[in-house]
Image (cartoon, rainbow, N blue to C red; front, side):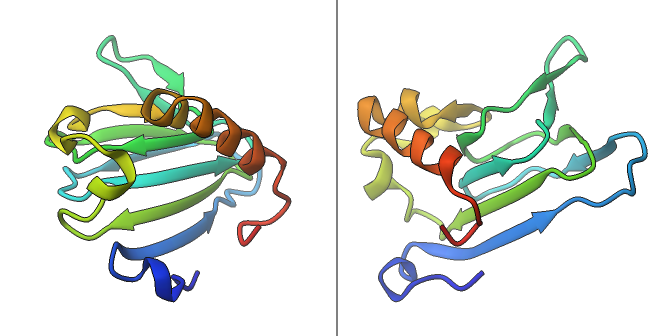
Length: 133
């Protein structure tokens, strides 16, 4: 998905992925460590992220994923949609107003990151009918 001119200095890219595994069991996806933080919006069936106990827990619908120093595992059901905004190195700070190392290896909701404004944005995203909206 194209990045708007105003966001180009901050975002490396924006991607929209819709998972289609033809109704089969959820796909298991392993990711490598990631140096760049991302804002992630999930639509459709809930995606699970493996926790320290080895169980998959639902990932919140709108999250900020800090830089990751360890690989992660996800369970992705058919029909899930991922919209990811990946930041340039050092460019997420203006949006989160804190040291980004506080987010390393963490997944936080916008409510946790931005308070009431984050909750409002989460609601607006949940109501959007298309990735562009």
